[in-house]
Amino acid sequence: MVKVAVVGDDEQHLKNWSKLQEAEVLSIVPVKSTTPGKIAFQINGGERVEDVEKLNVDVIDLCVPVEDRPELIRQFSKQGTHIICASPLASTLKEASSIITECKEKQVHLYVGNMRRYSPEYVDANNQIRNGNIGRAGVIRLSRGAPHPGGEKDIFSELGIDEFEWLLWTFGDVERVIAKHIKRKRRNGTQVEYALLSIRMIDKSFAHVALSWAKTENGTSFELTGDKGMITHNSTDSNPISLQVTASSQEDQLEEMILDKSVLQRQFAYVLDQAKNPNKPVNLAHDALKSMQLVDAARKSAQTGQPVSIKEARWSYESRDD
Image (tube, rainbow, N blue to C red; front, side, top):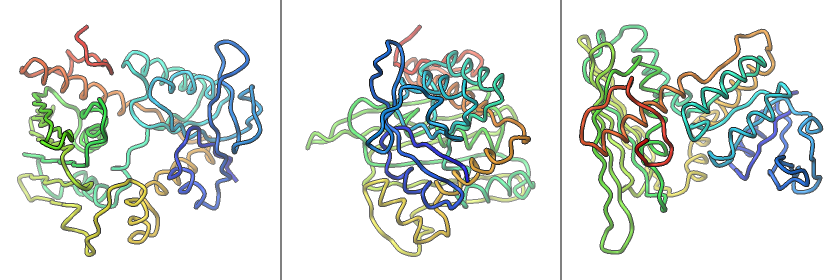
């Protein structure tokens, strides 16, 4: 049995962990410590723990804001606790790189979650590309749409980063990117937002990524073209039952009705397997750094209207020119 602590308030993560028979799950909420500079934890809404060692868990699932992630990752990695965390790991590329180095030194698995790597359609497409079924890649088209989350969110990092990481995982590194970004308000005051990226890959293929925060429901698609064939997928077209949902929790319930395991469960099962096999190579998060670089390059290109080389990119989670 692997003891897992979900740190933060995320009911979907708790529910999906609980459905894995090999996981014993705790809900932990960070609270203010009586010791300056420290973070305490409340377990399952009751017991309060000031010392990380007393939690005695094997895996930490961090569901906290980006600004809180670095300190928590450092605290838990000191105890040899394996960690899964959403991207980005930190507010800056430099800090994220430092965290990865520290976890490597401590032989701690640091896994950056990505839903695309465990979605059957995207896994199958990745396998087909690697097996050469479409030949030499030519033009790659990815899209993702969702309702606007409200507030001052960043469309590149919030909506695009899973697509970028899958693109890098499947097709390799990026050479340069040019991006456009549009924000508007409808007459009723609701926000809409779009981003379009044209990306030149190292292998000289081209990727076009369209992001939209103007949809009424979540949806993704891809069109992957090579000199021997093409693979396409549209999440709306491929559903035999059309059901409109507006919340991620409802989307997850629909996944469970269709799949034996939800995408989250597949992802968590992989993390459990890593935790149970300490002799496996330490799982690091280098792909997450590359996707952070791409986000930064896209943002800078949108601001300047010019192509940006990935070599020039420096991550800044806040929108500012350094």
